[in-house]
Image (cartoon, rainbow, N blue to C red; front, side, top):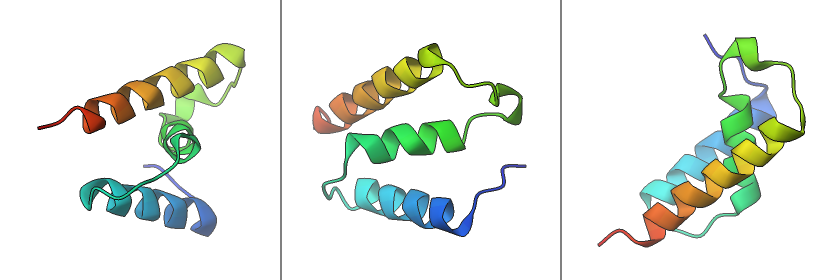
Length: 68
């Protein structure tokens, strides 16, 4: 089970809604959601985690922008 704070849940809801409605959103929102929704055993954060999240978020946004 993933447990989010109210603030995190609202941010994830806003991000998913924006994606589904094809509205604009920020890469940092995607990065945060990826970190928050990571499995609980990934609680040890390091520079690689941040870079991984950022790169994955960018890939997701690029794929969404290139959709027909």
